[in-house]
Image 1 (cartoon, rainbow, N blue to C red):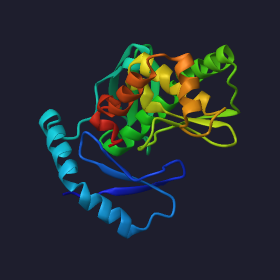
Image 2: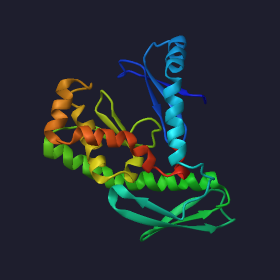
Image 3: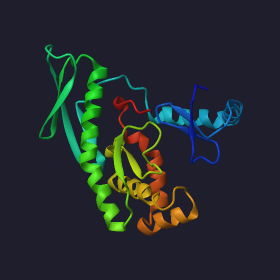
Length: 232
């Protein structure tokens, strides 16, 4: 079995395992969980982990790295062409937008720099697209929050701090619009219930009756994130 990463969570009440489509294995554990308990839990579930990895391997063939020339953003129904322009006078890769084309320019032979530039563009686009949706839902359902952060989390689609800051994963741009909306509602509801209690899910259910299916779909939506993005 391959290696795994461990993430300690204040919200976790028990140990759990997440296997991502391209082979990353993460163990989520409550705070103060010792390494022996983690190792024992992984050993106990190694057969399930291996079966899941094998299942994903059948669906996701190994990908060789390639910079994208076209990006489909399902969440906002937009397809963007990516054009690369070499410019040896620059030391860093930059981007500019021209309609439905993103021009990446500079030392574009450096693939890592190109991906960083595309992430900066996606972060800006996510702020433009997702924050107004969050604000609209907040006002519609009287679920206030303090401020918003756009991030590229490797482990969650969104989160909310006790101070009222909602962090949104920019990868939501790649998922279905209704799934995106569900995640925003989910985080807004944490303003009243900072847990996943019955009261929390009851509130979510009053705003989105299909939340159970959407929550399952969200958990599987990492497969919508393209391999070049490097999130898993």
